[in-house]
Amino acid sequence: MEKTGFIEIRITGTKGNLDLTPDTYDVREVIAVLEQIEGLLFPADKKERPIISYQIQSGSVRHIFKTAVQYIIGFNALIGQISQRQDIDFLESATAKAFEEFQEMAVQRGYAFRISTSEPNTNELHIDRTTKLYRTEAVWAEAEFYLYGRVTNAGGKDRANIHIQTDDYGLVIIKTPIVVLEKMEGNILYHTFGVRVVGKQHTETGELDRSDIRFIELIDYHPNYDEDYLQSLRSKAKKNWLGSIKPDAWLRELRGSYDA
Image (cartoon, rainbow, N blue to C red):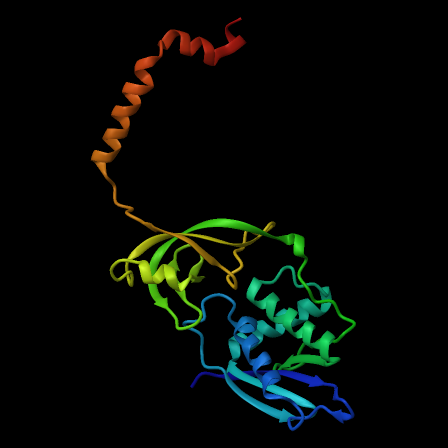
């Protein structure tokens, strides 16, 4: 059986005159924390991740997330680095966004977070209204990308999207207007396409922010070698370009002053 460990997110604070406990902690606040855990542990491809189990315990409010110990070990090192640097610009976008959400809860509600693990001598990360765990806005810039890969899923009742498995970025989820999916002809599942998208890119690392990738255009992608097509390009170039130049004059122009 696979060894497991846990992450503990302890939240302290008050609700008016009442101390924070599981009885005074609203279900929406529970959901807000649950929505971040995948981003903390599995920021890239979530499809193959192990099971994450959950408990809420008293003392003020303790969120306990149990999963495979190898991921707990990595997370323990991660919170140690954040605690030391007080900076999250080096994190993958999904992980950084999760910590930003905790920072916002701390500021808006006056809560204090203590994040630790089951590891011996665990690192601890403290987040409260005095900390400033936000990404530097200038680090991320809007950019346009061309993604190529196999479509593994498409649709959605309210939040329509396309899932595409790429070689460069792994599984990427692209927000796609429902009207676009309605107009697509035939079944695009398990076919290879190019997709033109817009999203945010880290200006230093080149990382793509997977949390907000938006559809622009689907490109019918045919990567096969086409000799006839290449031959037609050569013929056009020979007729339109090579046929219109004088070789001696062209060489003299390229050499410039080097003949002098």
